[in-house]
Image (cartoon, rainbow, N blue to C red; front, side):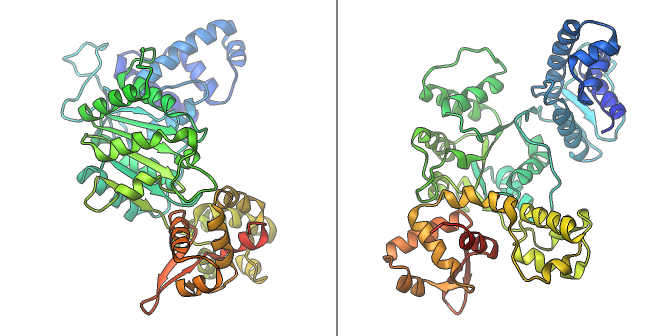
Length: 464
């Protein structure tokens, strides 16, 4: 959005909710913050004190928070407005869309206050669910390469089959977060509350529960129960009475390194109680977990007929060509080779495409002429934390697999890896849950391998 679109969009949203337009000083603050100005700069151009600007800005953020249904601050203004605009435009084109008590038309006409109501009285469309959004913790919505099938699968599981707990799994950069954000656009009208929380900084369970409950109860200063069981009980009561969609991103941060996939760090074991209660008890809501690997509750409870589901994301295939077009790469006849080598991982492909653009001026054929699998520091840095968290058993197995250019059978691994069948099965299963081994069937035999990128990383770094 340009600055005029920002101003018009925000003003119409506020007017539809309150019957009042933004005044000149509020508009100056909004546009100044949008353009990255400090309050002192806005004060200077508005001919008033910085303290007055701060006071008016604080009231403006509160007003916008009420209108948008999520907390708006000076630092997240741009992302909050962009999210709302994208949600509205993409939601059921041609129909009305409701955010909180705000009814916005999707045909870009200005919202109108019904004549039967006072302009200061919020409108309410009882024919549609009222959706309150808390996406302040969510990143910017990025473009989504062809994930039509995955979106349809998740929508069916969550909306039609009403699963309670779903995990979106895969390597870093494969598109879990982007898929979740676009999923919200498709299904949010089925929920009364939509909440996004990141676990990137490993918050303890009591903090996460406090965060969720304060938004759901709409009382930031409420005195909550001090014990985790009581907070869990209160949350579950709310999930039964209301239709809530909660997304927890970066769940792998509460899971342990040095053990098989799915085990918790000692101080985060109590998250298992939350996940198990949501997966096993009857309620009207859904919790989505984005993670490099599934917590153990997912693997224990998931099933086609179960209220617990998981989706392991693969590469995007030939749809990745759009990444190369955006990077202005040349020699499109060679792109498929590059996509296959980097397994259609959007982040990996963006990194290597940047390298080709910077060194070879976009000539993919010249890059491939050297017949090397280039990782570079950026790509290696994305793999390091994932390989580094492996158990010793998994490291031993992935090193053994990386020595082979071709797939290896279980019989070969038992002969060469000096492992018991039980150890081998546990290690392969865990690597599979981490998306670090590829499995294929050939002549009634199961074969295992690692993708070229992972193999190159393992060979080039002291993993074993």
